[in-house]
Length: 220
Image (cartoon, rainbow, N blue to C red; front, side, top):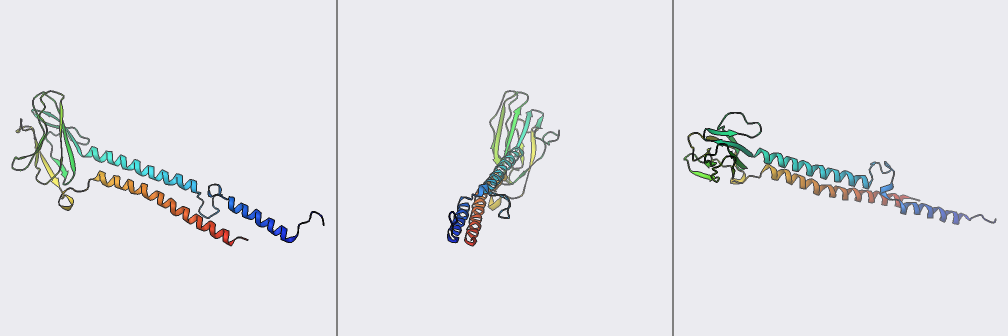
């Protein structure tokens, strides 16, 4: 009869429509839950990117906190060293505990205009490291060093009887010296996280492609 398609024509038409839907299907527009996971490629990219960004932010925050913890600030006057770092007591010339193999900064401000310096010495009074001499009120100076067991005191060599405090170095430097700073470990963790996220995304895409291929093969 006129207008009626043969069974073969109807079958071919159905296959064409089904094939068109299969070829045009994109994971970005696939309904959540169709593959049992409920996550599209686009949402996975957003999640992975957010995780990497959060890891980097955490690394930077931890890095800044660690750097602050390794800086000891003092006010210096003839009478004594005055601690100024967060959590320090009001005690003058306090004992400072350091971790062997870790880098520190001892910073000070001249409070009275007399000449002062910051010197790190061993038990024999030998200078290990020393800052410049500052002679005006409000001037600042600092000394940066890696803590070792030889360090026993910080002192102003111009006023050695009043401006002197003990240093207590604990632990051992890894591998005979130069242990890995906490800042480096935190940054490394952030970089690893940023590197792993794209790999996870690639595995996700590979898994989706295999599932899509299996569905197409098993189709009518």
